[in-house]
Image 1 (spheres, helix red, strand yellow):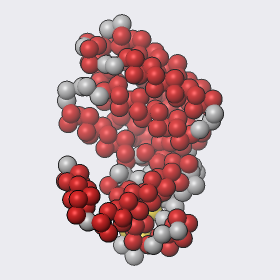
Image 2 (cartoon, one colour; image 1 turned 90 degrees about the vertical axis):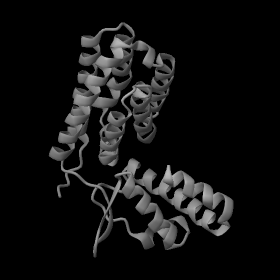
Image 3 (cartoon, one colour; image 1 turned 180 degrees about the vertical axis):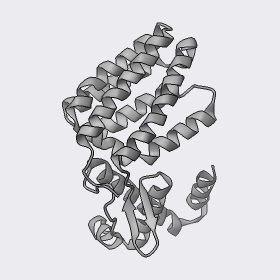
Image 4 (cartoon, one colour; image 1 turned 60 degrees about the horizontal axis):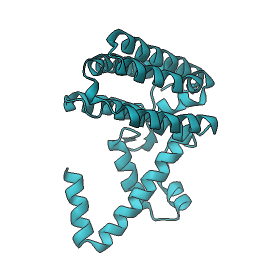
Length: 233
């Protein structure tokens, strides 16, 4: 909310500041794209000067963009070293993924008890878009679609604190999580697994929904192991 009010202030009163904010937002989008596409790899140094030249802007908006990406969990900063893409070992990644799985299995059980909380039509449309992205081998769009599917699935769940914590965990491993979409082991199953999740919740089948989500995470784990970069801390 604070960021929104600051944005409105700049929009109304800060012509010059608005320009810098827009450049920073554009730079953040471009850096995010580099991370998701794998051009900037986990653990890789994010050189401000190099990025500024690449985007044809000054270093200031690049620095602001990197600070923004820190808040999203995509970038880390170390004094005297600088900015780098967030990195985890495979073991650490799978530990975080296990927490995701526990929470999501719980959530689909609860949604199966109250189907009115789920927008099934929207989920099926998102899943169709994911299928298109898979056919085009568009890793960024697959990742975005998968995130959107899961967020839409729980969108109306009343415990917003739980959802907030889940989103924070997603952001912690976002750059690494997209790597698994390079694995055909995972991408070949996403559409059908999502459909199974939709069908079991729609049927009010709590056990079936839990089983479908666990199967989805098993595929994701296989994909992560197969595609995870051989880079340790």
